[in-house]
Length: 149
Image (tube, rainbow, N blue to C red; front, side, top):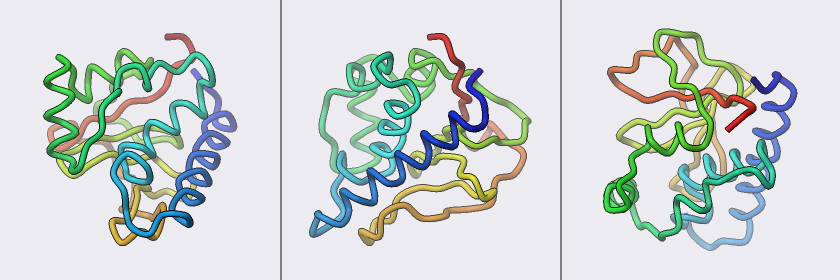
């Protein structure tokens, strides 16, 4: 497993990258500064050159529904993507910094202040979304990065 500091540094770098992109975009842009891109950038920041997520998600999207539809057309879904990218799926555990969550609304990262973080559709960059609570996988899918793929 990655240690707390590895995951925290990757979360901070991903947040900075998405926030920097947001400064140069006139509007919220799927695939540039949206929640799925936040999750993708986080994986790249955590794993570096060993990240395979860009090779799996090679398409553009204009909504969460389209993102999920295009994943399905590639015979993928968020669960498969998490597993292929080296995440252990969680159930009934307390989230930790660097966990990745998918639900019907989008993707989230477990941030350092006890909140899930995601992106703002008002083009405000990364925001706090909700407090991190014990994981209920009936409503969402959560993965924790492991070191080896």
